[in-house]
Length: 479
Ligand code: MN
Image (tube, rainbow, N blue to C red; front, side, top):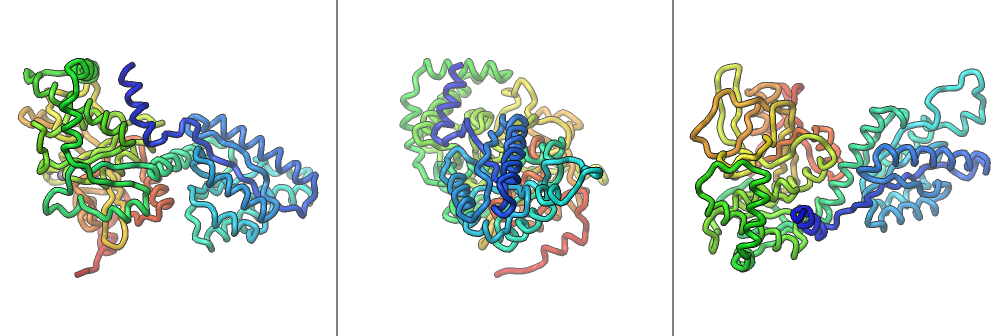
């Protein structure tokens, strides 16, 4: 119970939107007369209510006034932008809605936009259809006019096409809402860097000004002493309470209880620090542990389990990105977490990778339930290419470890690359993929593609369809 409250408090600083909503904006024009517009508003209301019932657990869907003029469009988009609980907007053209009417409204919009290409009616009424019906129900006409202006203006958006009540359409709208929520979270995310980047390491470094411009991450340095000061004041009672939480979540097969109590102290201190400063992700580096007796490994793992992003070696990008992806996955089954690539089994035709999962956590301190099991997953990372960011997303297959590794003191995952080891790992290397990434059994490459789309990030996908020929696309040289 106590823990639940602490987690909520942690999140408060990052402004979690319990009432997250999507506005539904329907396009028409004043040419058709009151009768037609009345019908448009009625159908729009019915659709908004339907969608709200279906995806309200992620974000509520609320209808705004029909766009009949440029002024109404501006008013609707102002509402979308000024409402802090609004994470994005769904638009649909019931009738034809001349798209010049949308230009000034769309210029205001910065939140994720879904273009729902649908109709109020599922079937064509062959026996009764007349010109009135054609004028009222012309998404095939109006949505193309609208699609043109989105393309012409370069507005990042996602198109979902199909009858709005169909399961696959609802599923896509739900996924859009989850990505939009993650983007809203990203734009308010604060990252604490304890110490700087690890000396000489390239991929964990990056342009913090640019990540704030692109993703909203406010990344700032804190002295480790700021944390040590709080840790020194953690009481034995607070440590006892944290140990109770550990016992309920993990199987402890260690005699080194003192070391675990030290970790518990760090976590209590970290929670206090994160809450006080409204921080949702943090980094540390083993080159700067002044005042700490150990790396806060268990503390970091447990915090990650609560959605707090963490990056070792000063990797602020993976700390922030993992927090964003955990937010994206929060309404789904499965697991999402930070991993580090380490070593391979190169048995011909049966190549496997061994990656450590969530830092230096001893197996003697294993989670009661395995966090990540066998099955389909994605591996995703984000790198700074100097003049732009690149997201690399690979489909992978998690496998059970073929044999026990009794001397390996880390939690780990093993996986198979796609389409095979040769192409999959070569593509990752060519693309500049980091050795820090997020593995998720909840998210798919489509979710990552939507995140890339809405944040204007270059995206490299590695999957079953990647070929030798694709590897040539990365040719080029820069000095
Ligand atoms: Mn590393």
